[in-house]
Amino acid sequence: MHQNYYLIKQLTQQLRPILIGMQVVTCFSQNKDELIIGFTSGSREFYIRAMLTSHFSALSFPGEFKRARKNTVELLKPLLGQTVENIVQHMNERSFYIELTGGMLLLFKLFGNRSNIVLYQHGEAIDLFHKKFSSDLDLDPMQMDRPLPQNFAAFSAADGNLKKLYPTFGDLPTLYLEDQHYSTKPLEQKWEIVQNVLEQLENPESYFITKISGKLRLSLLPLGDIQQTFSTPIEALNAYTRSYLTETGFGQQYEQSKQQLTKKLTGTQSVLEQSEAKLNELKYNRSYSQTADVIMANLTNIPARANEVELYDFYTDQNRLIKLKAGETPQRFAERLYRKAKNQHVEVRQLEEKVERKLEEVILLEDALQALAEVKGYKELKAYLRDYAHLFTTRQQVQQEAPFRLFETEGFKILVGKSAKNNDELTQRHTFKDDLWLHAKDVSGSHVVIKHQAGKTIPVTVLEKAAQLAAYYSKRKNDSLCPVLYTPKKYVRKPKSAPAGAVFVEREKVLLVKPENPFEKKV
Image: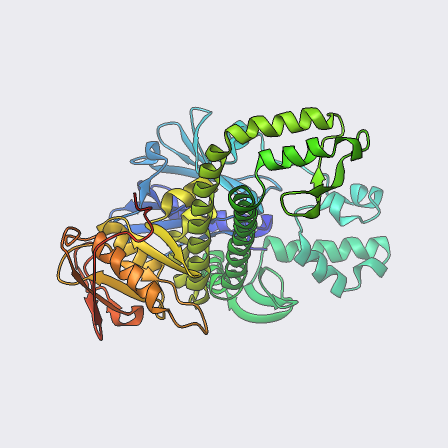
């Protein structure tokens, strides 16, 4: 009910004397779903924080707001310097607008997960907060009142149907009415009960944070297990937003983030497995030309218009199932395979590149899920979602974000940082306490990580190859031998204000190796 019409109506009544005459001095965002608008008048300050996410939208009013030094962006810039002249609540609608000087009007559309803020000048929409709701530019705030016939005649004609006459009630007033056995009363008594509830909604004595069916709710009516009581809508909204984000919001957002990452990881692993199987088949098992040879040798054994057929493969001395195209003769199908065989090396190279990209994505997603498991509160989750925002967008962005080169040997993954900045990201975000961390001793170079596998000891051969990579991607690349230090990640830390790539290492061991990339093909 924190976005219920009656609560918003009470809120705008409280905001009107506070904001009229105040000037907009700042309007910015430092989280993609949050807008901060700051007002001043003399020594007075007032802030509106609009949190408009896909799973939770709410207004709150912090007493002060310290803007971050970075990762912030100015929005709705024409607002700056304009003075508030009035606040207008739409009739029977979950929206209101602020009238300002300069012909400006700021619409707050509080429609659940489609909430948005739209800026108008001289009656024309010129900007909006959530660009994904572009149709909001067509809204006319002068035409958003929703007059409803709510007299006894209309009530009688609707036979007391609340959804037809009072769609603004929402679920909590309806639940409150049912607690008074509304549905069993005669029509006249229903009307009286509704009028009493309307009086409480229009003139609430208190605002309640309550739990109903295990969910935290904000109500104008005494319902459920009441947790806190407030005398003004601003106090109630501030407290409710804090409580929701701390309790309900954290759990929901955490699970939603986990599900998104898990789904993306599962899909990426599936593509990786398919690509690896196809690559192995082309490289080691069955080439296109071999399949075509088997088809041509068995033409008389293939039924007409068959989708698939089991044929004797003389290359392997076994029967094998071959898929065909029903609308194509076996000869034509074999001809296509012979043509594809000419470019098979190109397809192999493309598949190798695809496998490498998918392996990178898998590591990024696995690391993100491991980091998410360590998040314990809403503030940590908020920072996490900001740091890992690229993983919740398109696959292309995931690929671009990989800060490391990837090598794989004996079932172990070795990651090599691509630059000083990438070294920091690799060590701080993609390396966990049991991973093994390596670096060329006493010179600048790439951070190298061998990913830990539960219950497995890293073989000496894997350690040596990783050390060779650390030496190869360092200033000692051209030395005949290079000392490389290694230690579990838990003994590597980043000092405050240290330059990019700089870390402090404890309990390290040293291995002497020849600098080279053992994964490059020797000519």
